[in-house]
Length: 169
Image (tube, rainbow, N blue to C red; front, side, top):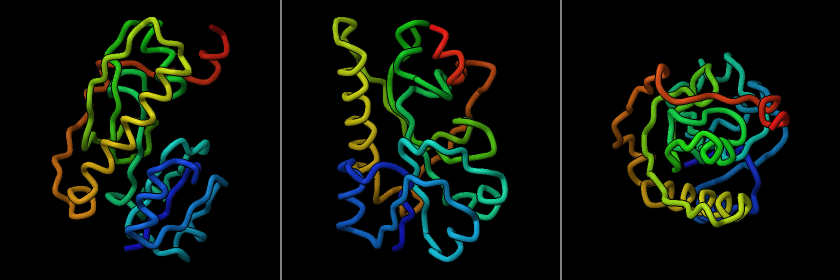
């Protein structure tokens, strides 16, 4: 199985996938042509800093998976950990299918996480990153075999934040 891993290869999720699959990794902006040359079975995005555009989403629909450190539909977009404390929203992690929106795709796995408010934001971010990777690894067999239920997000609930909003706090 071939995986395109979009994100930092220093994550233990990358090492897990690399032991079990043929993995191509990048943090750079990637084009549809480059992806087509790789011919991945799945594209896994974790901490990827670029927006994946429509043509890629259309062609690889159902094969694009994003790991997000919020309990979706709350805190879609930028700095989800920060906003969960500011707005006192549920804290957690979510694995979702990617669509044309930002963190709006169907949820396939998620977990609420208790975060002690005495922890620093850096510490809570580390905990959430560890939890999302563990959730993915625990469910990898279900993901690769398509044995999961897709849950549509109710976008009338939850929240969305931009990088600009985060810079202004």
